[in-house]
Length: 280
Image 1 (cartoon, one colour):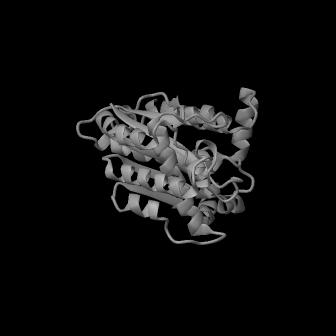
Image 2: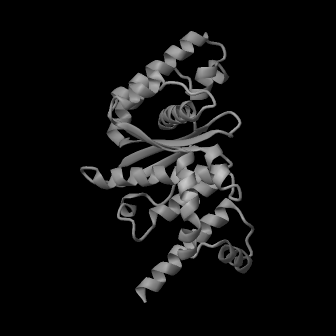
């Protein structure tokens, strides 16, 4: 079986940047990776932000030692046979052009992008096998992420869907796969933050180490992306049956309140109705 571990990362106030990243590999590749990672941590559960900022399990360790640990774990990940992908959002750009949309839409857009990319890798894998997705345990996003994942994994017209296990597994920070995904999610987030500012900085050495392998990449959605998408959004939404009026009618009909999960369910209902129409 193929295994995918994912996590998210954002700036402290969740105002500037948000990213989701996942690490993908075979069971054997994960077995080979876990040993060196666990040996270097000596019983600690890695958390990228805590390690870099001397908090949590890393509060009692000298800052230089924590940075050394971070760098060595990055090299362990880079020297593995695992591959990674991340998706990041410029939150200021999103809110500028979509001020009327839920604030957590970027989270699920990034999550969706990562699932779609890993789905492609699963389809291309030799030999082909099913992929099980594991995501970090976060109370505020678990349910909606699971709903969105189930929708993607059962899309009838997505040729990668048959290779995905149909349910998302929520995993804890003690899992090495989640720890590795946390490190890469932070790298994607920091890379985006250094790109959009407010202080622009060169690419971090840890990110350079991972990119140099040619097995780690990411998509960054910047202000220009949202400006262009806003221009196209209304006509696309109307043609797809996703106008605000139609959505509000659906909320009334189903006795639901507006929420991220309701928007996911609305998309699922649209997909089902369209599928039924095409089969008639």
